[in-house]
Image (cartoon, rainbow, N blue to C red; front, top):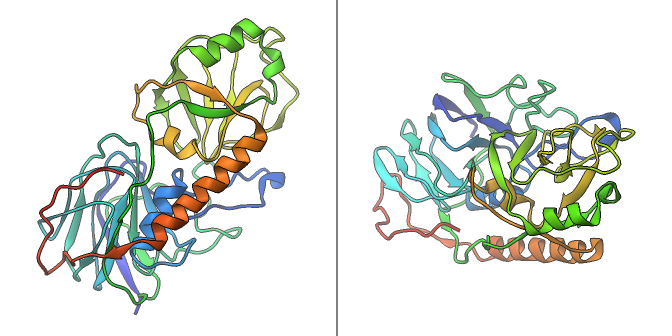
Length: 328
């Protein structure tokens, strides 16, 4: 059975995202996809969707919506107040939502990006191998744009499944964010690299799906702030003439002409992306080989979390959980 989601109050910067549009960098098209791929994958697993199904991603506030069929819904990304049909539910679990019931998602606490998965997935057209919205190109998702009040989103066939909950916590330690130096770290003096690795930085208020401008010490490139444009990726840390470090995000450009002092490793990219504005952190350098080991370990940990999801008592139309949840 197919169906539709009706958006009553669109979340902030709400878009349709999936695992990403891969293999297109050489054509100038960045991957897009969920900024926090870990929270995205868990949301889909909680509602029984196949890997790669499309969800709604939002920044800070999730808004409200209803569905025209019974389905499972899960909200992940951070801790938040969640109501289904006016009754309290918990994030990081899936809940049975009855036809016509309104789901309302209040602001996230301690996180920036939230994910709303509905059983069956959101079946907007596939563009270049993905349903993800690329806002800069106006491509994919729903007409290549952010969602608005009154939008209707098609759902795929309902998979068999029942409500699930997490039995282990998604690790997000309060620790330095690990980076691989370069590829233009030689543009910076040893003293400036020491500043980069020893002084605190924080996400600034100027941030979106394309980039995050950091607050922190001003960085000066001894060999200048212009280079022959070369490849960039999500996690690249550019340093323009302003001296303010910029971390590229999921919708970033694929080439750039500023020196890149370091690159955030894939295992830590979701944690950095989820940091609230103003939260300070330090960088820690690792080798490329160690970064690959950490990426494999993060993937195994995510697979373990998904494999150990356990049955949860249904919420829509049934007894509600009263126990307090702890943010993963």
